[in-house]
Length: 401
Image 1 (tube, one colour):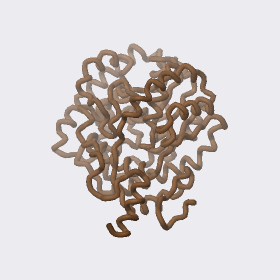
Image 2: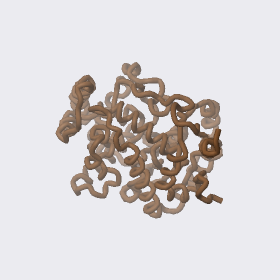
Image 3: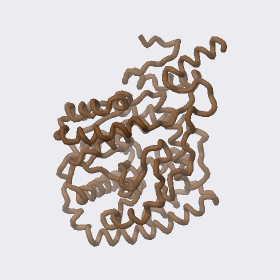
Image 4: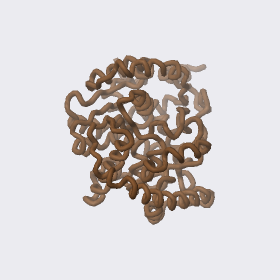
């Protein structure tokens, strides 16, 4: 092994990644693991027509998916109408009495792990997979439909091997996408055209009408969750990291947990996430031509936005968590979350988290390759995040002492 190879190996090993490009130490999850449902199966017929009218690229190989989404959209519209007849007035009158807790941070930074741990506390509620996929009818249909459609879900999530199921925690952004189409998650349909979805991250460029529609739909969804269980709602959507101003406007007493992770790991895992989601949810052939650049742009914008808006959150309402610390000491880090945010009931949830520790220790993350050239590119683009959160470059030309 020559000196260059030794140098590259030592750098790669310092971030627990293989040094040689090629196959990962453990194979990445292959597309096709998401099951029979995609992100668009919860659309109403009118929103499905609107999405198709925006001219997303389609492909004949996706005809079964297009047909099933069309069929589901008709059923969703009918069930949504019935639910509104049964629950509409109750939802309208419902107050969101308990300020929500927002888990924010970039995708693949540990938001799901944190959300799962928070969900162990019975004083809280959270949106689950069924509720976000079918936000228009879950009050009416969830108990029945989830029992007869379990076969359609995989045992683990396709992107990271975490357990899957209708009752598992999930991002409320999926529900907002289905209800409004005012979400960056329509990128699954418009994979080649960021202009179709980029303004839906921070919502600053929405028209007044779009903003009212987004806000009304978001509150309507939270009211429905409150009708189901009148508790504080723990919400996890990385997109909310861009939206601190509007979230503070809606919920001045809300609390936030920001989680960050080594940018090298976030980048590689985000690439895998994008590749998997585009294949599993697309309406045409997956487009990965600008995958690296888009991933870097989204990450950089998220960090910049968070840094410039976190001062809007009152003292005592924001706590930052380091993923590596949460992974190595979940009990101690969760205790700090409760202490720093003034959340009651730690003595009640501590045994539940303690019981989960064996399962957490057995969980195996996807592992990825990274060479020194890619590390240098990532560090150059993400340097502010490395400095802000105290992660070393692990590159010989930068002094991290």
